[in-house]
Length: 74
Image (cartoon, one colour):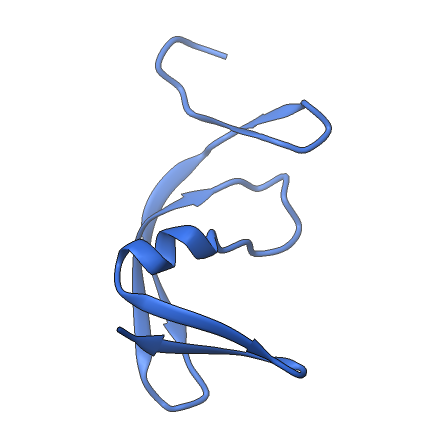
């Protein structure tokens, strides 16, 4: 991996390269859209991951209820 290239550290101590970074729009069940900036694209990860602590820093409150996640603006 070249100097300055970003990488993601996994739980098994492996690293995988970040291929890019962009803005992603999440369509919520309420009909609203949540825009996430600087989202990392890592093709080796097969599922989408959201860093919940980051959402809290940008004003999104998260609560976990039964079988759903409720996101609201603070």
